[in-house]
Length: 117
Image (cartoon, rainbow, N blue to C red; front, top):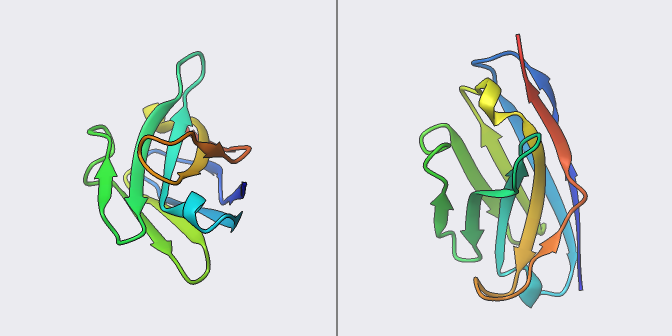
């Protein structure tokens, strides 16, 4: 089992920046792949970014060049640095982890990000 706790959400104006953090505990192997998903209002949950234990990263096209995912394996944390935020980035952001890309996800409870002028 893995427990994930997100922090760092909030409200920001378009063009602004936010950093989301995820603190993880539990199974070592359950943290091999960590990532962030988001669910905009009235829409399906979608991938934002993933990072493996060895640092391989993957991003959704909509956030490439604006968002950066990082992790600290010693501290079991994963951060999402979000720059040049747009109103369409408004969503609940969820931290996730799993043993492999084919394994079930563990999920955090989510943190709200609102981008509005």
